[in-house]
Length: 422
Image (cartoon, rainbow, N blue to C red; front, side, top):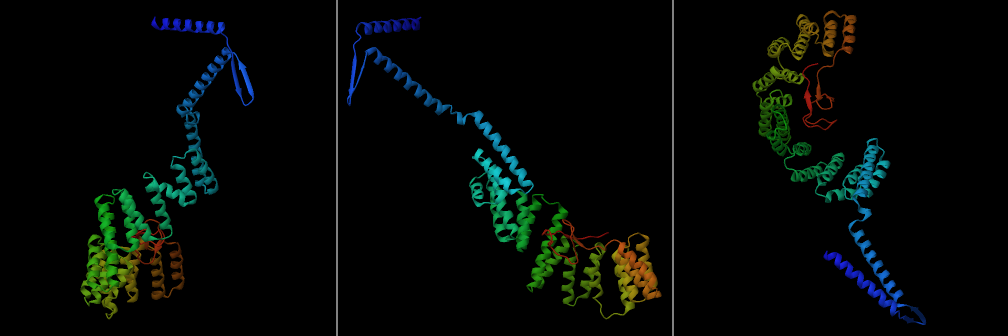
Protein backbone atom coordinates (compact mmCIF):
# COMPACT_ATOMS: atom_id res chain seq x y z
CA UNK A 1 0.00 0.00 0.00
CA UNK A 2 2.84 2.38 0.83
CA UNK A 3 4.57 1.61 -2.45
CA UNK A 4 1.33 2.23 -4.38
CA UNK A 5 0.89 5.55 -2.56
CA UNK A 6 4.44 6.50 -3.47
CA UNK A 7 3.74 5.80 -7.15
CA UNK A 8 0.56 7.96 -7.03
CA UNK A 9 2.53 10.78 -5.39
CA UNK A 10 5.23 10.52 -8.06
CA UNK A 11 2.63 10.61 -10.84
CA UNK A 12 1.01 13.74 -9.34
CA UNK A 13 4.41 15.47 -9.16
CA UNK A 14 5.10 14.65 -12.80
CA UNK A 15 1.67 15.96 -13.83
CA UNK A 16 2.14 19.20 -11.87
CA UNK A 17 5.57 19.61 -13.42
CA UNK A 18 4.19 19.14 -16.90
CA UNK A 19 1.41 21.71 -16.22
CA UNK A 20 3.92 24.18 -14.87
CA UNK A 21 6.15 23.81 -17.93
CA UNK A 22 3.06 24.25 -20.16
CA UNK A 23 2.12 27.51 -18.39
CA UNK A 24 5.70 28.76 -18.38
CA UNK A 25 7.19 27.45 -21.61
CA UNK A 26 10.19 29.74 -21.70
CA UNK A 27 13.05 29.29 -24.17
CA UNK A 28 16.71 28.33 -24.17
CA UNK A 29 19.44 30.04 -26.24
CA UNK A 30 22.88 28.47 -26.78
CA UNK A 31 25.54 30.61 -28.49
CA UNK A 32 28.90 28.96 -29.32
CA UNK A 33 31.49 30.16 -31.88
CA UNK A 34 28.92 31.94 -34.01
CA UNK A 35 26.39 29.12 -33.78
CA UNK A 36 22.99 29.72 -32.12
CA UNK A 37 20.65 27.02 -30.92
CA UNK A 38 17.14 27.97 -29.77
CA UNK A 39 14.79 25.48 -28.16
CA UNK A 40 11.98 25.39 -25.66
CA UNK A 41 12.55 24.24 -22.12
CA UNK A 42 10.38 21.18 -22.79
CA UNK A 43 12.63 20.08 -25.66
CA UNK A 44 15.72 20.64 -23.54
CA UNK A 45 14.24 18.58 -20.71
CA UNK A 46 13.42 15.80 -23.18
CA UNK A 47 16.99 15.81 -24.49
CA UNK A 48 18.38 15.64 -20.94
CA UNK A 49 16.07 12.72 -20.25
CA UNK A 50 17.14 10.88 -23.39
CA UNK A 51 20.82 11.53 -22.63
CA UNK A 52 20.37 10.11 -19.13
CA UNK A 53 18.66 7.02 -20.50
CA UNK A 54 21.48 6.54 -23.06
CA UNK A 55 24.18 6.83 -20.37
CA UNK A 56 22.31 4.36 -18.22
CA UNK A 57 22.11 1.81 -21.06
CA UNK A 58 25.79 2.27 -21.94
CA UNK A 59 26.75 1.64 -18.32
CA UNK A 60 24.51 -1.45 -18.25
CA UNK A 61 26.14 -2.70 -21.48
CA UNK A 62 29.59 -2.21 -19.92
CA UNK A 63 28.61 -4.24 -16.87
CA UNK A 64 27.18 -6.97 -19.11
CA UNK A 65 30.49 -7.30 -20.97
CA UNK A 66 32.33 -7.48 -17.69
CA UNK A 67 30.14 -10.23 -16.24
CA UNK A 68 28.58 -12.11 -19.19
CA UNK A 69 31.09 -11.72 -22.01
CA UNK A 70 29.82 -13.85 -24.95
CA UNK A 71 33.46 -14.55 -25.95
CA UNK A 72 34.02 -16.34 -22.63
CA UNK A 73 30.62 -17.85 -22.15
CA UNK A 74 30.56 -21.50 -20.97
CA UNK A 75 28.87 -22.61 -24.18
CA UNK A 76 31.51 -20.99 -26.40
CA UNK A 77 34.39 -22.26 -24.24
CA UNK A 78 32.96 -25.80 -24.35
CA UNK A 79 32.76 -25.57 -28.14
CA UNK A 80 36.38 -24.38 -28.37
CA UNK A 81 37.48 -27.21 -26.10
CA UNK A 82 35.71 -29.80 -28.23
CA UNK A 83 37.35 -28.43 -31.38
CA UNK A 84 40.76 -28.36 -29.67
CA UNK A 85 40.46 -31.95 -28.50
CA UNK A 86 39.36 -32.99 -31.99
CA UNK A 87 42.44 -31.29 -33.48
CA UNK A 88 44.56 -33.00 -30.86
CA UNK A 89 43.18 -36.42 -31.82
CA UNK A 90 43.82 -35.70 -35.50
CA UNK A 91 47.37 -34.68 -34.67
CA UNK A 92 48.14 -37.88 -32.76
CA UNK A 93 46.54 -39.93 -35.53
CA UNK A 94 48.75 -38.21 -38.11
CA UNK A 95 51.81 -38.82 -35.96
CA UNK A 96 50.89 -42.50 -35.66
CA UNK A 97 51.38 -42.86 -39.43
CA UNK A 98 54.54 -40.67 -39.36
CA UNK A 99 52.88 -37.68 -41.05
CA UNK A 100 54.75 -35.06 -39.04
CA UNK A 101 53.65 -32.12 -41.22
CA UNK A 102 49.97 -32.84 -40.57
CA UNK A 103 50.69 -33.50 -36.88
CA UNK A 104 52.34 -30.09 -36.56
CA UNK A 105 49.43 -28.40 -38.34
CA UNK A 106 46.81 -29.97 -36.09
CA UNK A 107 48.98 -29.44 -33.03
CA UNK A 108 49.32 -25.69 -33.64
CA UNK A 109 45.58 -25.42 -34.26
CA UNK A 110 44.92 -27.29 -31.01
CA UNK A 111 47.33 -24.97 -29.19
CA UNK A 112 45.36 -21.90 -30.36
CA UNK A 113 42.13 -23.47 -29.13
CA UNK A 114 43.57 -24.90 -25.88
CA UNK A 115 46.23 -22.39 -24.76
CA UNK A 116 46.10 -23.50 -21.14
CA UNK A 117 46.32 -27.22 -21.93
CA UNK A 118 49.64 -29.10 -22.12
CA UNK A 119 48.25 -31.66 -24.57
CA UNK A 120 49.17 -29.63 -27.68
CA UNK A 121 52.66 -29.04 -26.31
CA UNK A 122 53.16 -32.79 -25.89
CA UNK A 123 52.01 -33.41 -29.47
CA UNK A 124 54.21 -30.67 -30.92
CA UNK A 125 57.17 -31.83 -28.89
CA UNK A 126 56.73 -35.39 -30.13
CA UNK A 127 56.31 -34.18 -33.71
CA UNK A 128 59.42 -32.01 -34.04
CA UNK A 129 61.19 -31.85 -30.66
CA UNK A 130 61.31 -28.04 -30.60
CA UNK A 131 63.05 -26.82 -27.45
CA UNK A 132 60.46 -24.08 -26.84
CA UNK A 133 57.78 -26.73 -26.35
CA UNK A 134 60.11 -28.69 -24.11
CA UNK A 135 60.81 -25.65 -21.93
CA UNK A 136 57.08 -24.94 -21.71
CA UNK A 137 56.43 -28.45 -20.39
CA UNK A 138 59.42 -28.26 -18.07
CA UNK A 139 58.06 -25.12 -16.42
CA UNK A 140 54.82 -26.86 -15.48
CA UNK A 141 55.28 -29.12 -12.41
CA UNK A 142 52.58 -31.44 -13.71
CA UNK A 143 54.41 -31.98 -17.01
CA UNK A 144 57.99 -31.84 -15.77
CA UNK A 145 58.28 -35.62 -15.67
CA UNK A 146 57.14 -35.85 -19.29
CA UNK A 147 59.74 -33.29 -20.34
CA UNK A 148 62.46 -35.23 -18.53
CA UNK A 149 61.30 -38.46 -20.20
CA UNK A 150 61.63 -36.81 -23.61
CA UNK A 151 65.14 -35.61 -22.72
CA UNK A 152 65.99 -39.12 -21.50
CA UNK A 153 64.87 -40.74 -24.76
CA UNK A 154 66.93 -38.24 -26.74
CA UNK A 155 70.09 -38.85 -24.70
CA UNK A 156 69.65 -42.63 -24.88
CA UNK A 157 69.18 -42.43 -28.64
CA UNK A 158 72.45 -40.49 -28.89
CA UNK A 159 74.04 -43.02 -26.48
CA UNK A 160 75.00 -40.26 -24.05
CA UNK A 161 74.82 -42.50 -21.00
CA UNK A 162 76.24 -40.03 -18.49
CA UNK A 163 73.65 -37.35 -19.36
CA UNK A 164 70.89 -39.97 -19.35
CA UNK A 165 71.90 -41.05 -15.85
CA UNK A 166 71.72 -37.45 -14.58
CA UNK A 167 68.21 -37.08 -16.02
CA UNK A 168 67.14 -40.32 -14.35
CA UNK A 169 68.40 -39.03 -11.01
CA UNK A 170 66.26 -35.89 -11.46
CA UNK A 171 63.27 -38.09 -12.25
CA UNK A 172 63.90 -40.17 -9.15
CA UNK A 173 63.91 -37.03 -6.98
CA UNK A 174 60.44 -36.19 -8.29
CA UNK A 175 59.15 -39.75 -7.88
CA UNK A 176 61.46 -41.66 -5.49
CA UNK A 177 59.25 -44.76 -5.23
CA UNK A 178 58.80 -45.31 -8.97
CA UNK A 179 60.13 -48.77 -9.80
CA UNK A 180 60.34 -48.08 -13.55
CA UNK A 181 62.78 -45.24 -12.86
CA UNK A 182 64.73 -47.55 -10.54
CA UNK A 183 65.04 -50.16 -13.29
CA UNK A 184 66.22 -47.51 -15.76
CA UNK A 185 68.81 -46.26 -13.26
CA UNK A 186 70.06 -49.83 -12.85
CA UNK A 187 70.34 -50.19 -16.63
CA UNK A 188 72.13 -46.84 -16.82
CA UNK A 189 74.64 -47.86 -14.15
CA UNK A 190 75.38 -51.09 -16.03
CA UNK A 191 76.03 -49.12 -19.22
CA UNK A 192 78.39 -46.83 -17.30
CA UNK A 193 80.12 -49.81 -15.71
CA UNK A 194 79.38 -48.64 -12.13
CA UNK A 195 78.88 -52.17 -10.89
CA UNK A 196 78.95 -51.43 -7.16
CA UNK A 197 76.19 -48.83 -7.49
CA UNK A 198 74.31 -51.12 -9.85
CA UNK A 199 74.36 -53.82 -7.18
CA UNK A 200 72.93 -51.39 -4.62
CA UNK A 201 70.17 -50.31 -7.00
CA UNK A 202 69.42 -53.96 -7.76
CA UNK A 203 69.00 -54.62 -4.03
CA UNK A 204 66.48 -51.74 -3.85
CA UNK A 205 64.51 -53.20 -6.74
CA UNK A 206 64.46 -56.61 -5.08
CA UNK A 207 63.31 -55.04 -1.79
CA UNK A 208 60.48 -53.29 -3.66
CA UNK A 209 59.56 -56.72 -5.11
CA UNK A 210 60.01 -55.44 -8.66
CA UNK A 211 61.98 -58.59 -9.47
CA UNK A 212 61.27 -62.14 -8.44
CA UNK A 213 63.88 -63.96 -6.39
CA UNK A 214 65.22 -66.00 -9.32
CA UNK A 215 65.66 -62.98 -11.58
CA UNK A 216 67.30 -61.01 -8.76
CA UNK A 217 69.84 -63.74 -8.14
CA UNK A 218 70.60 -64.05 -11.84
CA UNK A 219 71.18 -60.32 -12.32
CA UNK A 220 73.11 -60.11 -9.06
CA UNK A 221 75.37 -62.93 -10.31
CA UNK A 222 76.02 -61.02 -13.55
CA UNK A 223 76.88 -57.85 -11.60
CA UNK A 224 79.33 -59.83 -9.47
CA UNK A 225 80.81 -61.41 -12.60
CA UNK A 226 81.35 -57.98 -14.19
CA UNK A 227 83.07 -56.80 -11.01
CA UNK A 228 85.22 -59.91 -11.18
CA UNK A 229 86.15 -59.07 -14.77
CA UNK A 230 87.09 -55.51 -13.77
CA UNK A 231 89.24 -56.88 -10.96
CA UNK A 232 90.86 -59.36 -13.32
CA UNK A 233 91.71 -56.64 -15.85
CA UNK A 234 93.08 -54.40 -13.09
CA UNK A 235 95.31 -57.23 -11.84
CA UNK A 236 93.40 -57.58 -8.57
CA UNK A 237 93.31 -61.36 -8.62
CA UNK A 238 91.99 -61.80 -5.10
CA UNK A 239 89.09 -59.42 -5.76
CA UNK A 240 88.33 -61.13 -9.07
CA UNK A 241 88.27 -64.57 -7.40
CA UNK A 242 86.04 -63.29 -4.60
CA UNK A 243 83.44 -61.82 -6.94
CA UNK A 244 83.50 -64.89 -9.18
CA UNK A 245 82.78 -67.07 -6.15
CA UNK A 246 79.93 -64.73 -5.13
CA UNK A 247 78.49 -64.98 -8.63
CA UNK A 248 78.48 -68.78 -8.43
CA UNK A 249 76.86 -68.71 -5.00
CA UNK A 250 74.05 -66.56 -6.34
CA UNK A 251 73.68 -68.60 -9.55
CA UNK A 252 75.40 -72.02 -9.47
CA UNK A 253 74.72 -72.45 -13.22
CA UNK A 254 76.50 -69.24 -14.24
CA UNK A 255 79.06 -70.68 -16.66
CA UNK A 256 81.18 -67.53 -17.32
CA UNK A 257 81.88 -67.09 -13.60
CA UNK A 258 82.90 -70.76 -13.32
CA UNK A 259 85.31 -70.40 -16.26
CA UNK A 260 86.84 -67.25 -14.76
CA UNK A 261 87.27 -68.87 -11.36
CA UNK A 262 88.71 -72.00 -12.98
CA UNK A 263 91.28 -69.92 -14.89
CA UNK A 264 92.40 -68.28 -11.66
CA UNK A 265 92.82 -71.62 -9.91
CA UNK A 266 94.71 -72.96 -12.90
CA UNK A 267 96.97 -69.87 -12.96
CA UNK A 268 97.87 -70.63 -9.35
CA UNK A 269 98.71 -74.19 -10.32
CA UNK A 270 95.78 -75.69 -8.44
CA UNK A 271 94.32 -78.10 -11.04
CA UNK A 272 92.27 -79.87 -8.38
CA UNK A 273 90.24 -76.76 -7.49
CA UNK A 274 89.87 -75.80 -11.14
CA UNK A 275 88.60 -79.29 -12.00
CA UNK A 276 86.25 -79.26 -9.01
CA UNK A 277 84.67 -76.01 -10.20
CA UNK A 278 84.06 -77.53 -13.64
CA UNK A 279 82.60 -80.69 -12.16
CA UNK A 280 80.23 -78.80 -9.86
CA UNK A 281 78.73 -76.76 -12.67
CA UNK A 282 78.70 -79.67 -15.17
CA UNK A 283 76.25 -81.42 -12.88
CA UNK A 284 73.81 -78.55 -13.33
CA UNK A 285 74.57 -76.91 -16.71
CA UNK A 286 76.89 -78.71 -19.15
CA UNK A 287 78.48 -76.44 -21.74
CA UNK A 288 81.08 -76.98 -24.50
CA UNK A 289 83.33 -74.27 -23.00
CA UNK A 290 83.42 -76.18 -19.71
CA UNK A 291 84.40 -79.34 -21.57
CA UNK A 292 87.22 -77.56 -23.42
CA UNK A 293 88.55 -76.14 -20.16
CA UNK A 294 88.38 -79.52 -18.44
CA UNK A 295 90.27 -81.15 -21.32
CA UNK A 296 93.11 -78.61 -21.01
CA UNK A 297 93.68 -79.43 -17.35
CA UNK A 298 95.85 -82.47 -18.26
CA UNK A 299 97.58 -81.71 -21.57
CA UNK A 300 100.25 -84.44 -21.13
CA UNK A 301 97.98 -87.42 -20.48
CA UNK A 302 97.69 -90.33 -22.89
CA UNK A 303 94.54 -90.87 -25.03
CA UNK A 304 93.41 -93.79 -22.89
CA UNK A 305 93.89 -91.79 -19.68
CA UNK A 306 91.97 -88.92 -21.18
CA UNK A 307 89.08 -91.19 -22.15
CA UNK A 308 88.85 -92.62 -18.63
CA UNK A 309 88.99 -89.13 -17.08
CA UNK A 310 86.31 -87.82 -19.41
CA UNK A 311 84.14 -90.87 -18.69
CA UNK A 312 84.14 -89.95 -15.00
CA UNK A 313 83.47 -86.30 -15.84
CA UNK A 314 80.47 -86.87 -18.13
CA UNK A 315 79.04 -89.41 -15.69
CA UNK A 316 78.12 -86.38 -13.52
CA UNK A 317 75.40 -85.59 -16.08
CA UNK A 318 75.55 -88.65 -18.28
CA UNK A 319 72.34 -88.24 -20.28
CA UNK A 320 72.86 -84.63 -21.36
CA UNK A 321 73.57 -84.05 -25.09
CA UNK A 322 76.80 -82.21 -24.31
CA UNK A 323 78.02 -85.12 -22.21
CA UNK A 324 77.28 -87.59 -25.02
CA UNK A 325 78.92 -85.32 -27.62
CA UNK A 326 82.02 -84.89 -25.48
CA UNK A 327 82.32 -88.64 -24.86
CA UNK A 328 81.85 -89.33 -28.58
CA UNK A 329 84.60 -86.85 -29.52
CA UNK A 330 87.08 -88.40 -27.10
CA UNK A 331 86.11 -91.89 -28.28
CA UNK A 332 86.83 -90.86 -31.88
CA UNK A 333 90.21 -89.44 -30.85
CA UNK A 334 91.08 -92.74 -29.16
CA UNK A 335 89.59 -94.84 -32.00
CA UNK A 336 87.00 -96.28 -29.65
CA UNK A 337 84.42 -96.68 -32.41
CA UNK A 338 81.98 -98.66 -30.30
CA UNK A 339 81.96 -96.03 -27.52
CA UNK A 340 81.41 -93.20 -30.02
CA UNK A 341 78.60 -95.08 -31.78
CA UNK A 342 76.91 -95.91 -28.49
CA UNK A 343 76.90 -92.27 -27.34
CA UNK A 344 75.61 -90.91 -30.64
CA UNK A 345 72.95 -93.60 -31.00
CA UNK A 346 71.46 -92.49 -27.68
CA UNK A 347 70.88 -89.04 -29.16
CA UNK A 348 69.48 -90.32 -32.44
CA UNK A 349 67.21 -92.87 -30.81
CA UNK A 350 65.98 -90.29 -28.31
CA UNK A 351 65.29 -87.79 -31.13
CA UNK A 352 67.70 -85.31 -29.58
CA UNK A 353 70.30 -85.34 -32.34
CA UNK A 354 71.57 -81.93 -33.42
CA UNK A 355 73.79 -80.83 -36.28
CA UNK A 356 76.85 -81.66 -34.21
CA UNK A 357 75.50 -85.19 -33.64
CA UNK A 358 75.22 -85.90 -37.38
CA UNK A 359 78.60 -84.35 -38.11
CA UNK A 360 80.16 -86.68 -35.52
CA UNK A 361 78.36 -89.66 -37.09
CA UNK A 362 79.73 -88.63 -40.47
CA UNK A 363 83.23 -88.41 -38.96
CA UNK A 364 82.76 -91.87 -37.44
CA UNK A 365 81.87 -93.36 -40.85
CA UNK A 366 84.95 -91.78 -42.44
CA UNK A 367 87.38 -92.83 -39.71
CA UNK A 368 86.05 -96.34 -38.98
CA UNK A 369 84.81 -97.57 -42.36
CA UNK A 370 86.12 -94.98 -44.84
CA UNK A 371 82.54 -94.92 -46.11
CA UNK A 372 82.28 -91.52 -47.80
CA UNK A 373 78.75 -92.19 -49.09
CA UNK A 374 77.40 -92.89 -45.59
CA UNK A 375 79.29 -89.86 -44.28
CA UNK A 376 77.67 -87.62 -46.88
CA UNK A 377 74.25 -88.99 -45.95
CA UNK A 378 74.80 -87.97 -42.31
CA UNK A 379 76.11 -84.55 -43.43
CA UNK A 380 72.93 -83.95 -45.46
CA UNK A 381 70.86 -84.88 -42.40
CA UNK A 382 72.81 -82.31 -40.40
CA UNK A 383 71.54 -79.54 -42.69
CA UNK A 384 67.94 -80.16 -41.65
CA UNK A 385 68.74 -80.90 -38.02
CA UNK A 386 68.18 -78.46 -35.19
CA UNK A 387 70.83 -75.92 -34.34
CA UNK A 388 73.11 -76.72 -31.46
CA UNK A 389 72.37 -74.77 -28.29
CA UNK A 390 74.09 -71.39 -28.10
CA UNK A 391 74.11 -68.15 -26.17
CA UNK A 392 70.91 -66.29 -26.92
CA UNK A 393 69.32 -63.07 -25.71
CA UNK A 394 66.07 -63.88 -23.94
CA UNK A 395 64.71 -60.49 -25.02
CA UNK A 396 65.44 -60.29 -28.76
CA UNK A 397 66.55 -63.93 -29.31
CA UNK A 398 69.83 -62.88 -30.95
CA UNK A 399 72.39 -65.71 -30.96
CA UNK A 400 76.03 -65.20 -29.94
CA UNK A 401 79.05 -67.46 -29.93
CA UNK A 402 80.45 -66.06 -26.67
CA UNK A 403 78.90 -64.84 -23.47
CA UNK A 404 78.28 -61.11 -23.01
CA UNK A 405 76.62 -59.44 -20.03
CA UNK A 406 74.81 -57.03 -22.36
CA UNK A 407 73.15 -57.90 -25.65
CA UNK A 408 74.74 -55.91 -28.47
CA UNK A 409 71.47 -55.92 -30.41
CA UNK A 410 68.86 -54.71 -27.93
CA UNK A 411 71.38 -53.48 -25.28
CA UNK A 412 69.60 -55.40 -22.53
CA UNK A 413 71.79 -56.08 -19.53
CA UNK A 414 71.66 -59.69 -18.40
CA UNK A 415 69.68 -60.69 -21.46
CA UNK A 416 72.18 -63.28 -22.72
CA UNK A 417 71.45 -66.79 -21.42
CA UNK A 418 72.60 -70.26 -22.34
CA UNK A 419 69.83 -72.21 -23.99
CA UNK A 420 70.01 -75.62 -22.36
CA UNK A 421 67.94 -77.56 -24.85
CA UNK A 422 66.84 -77.54 -28.45
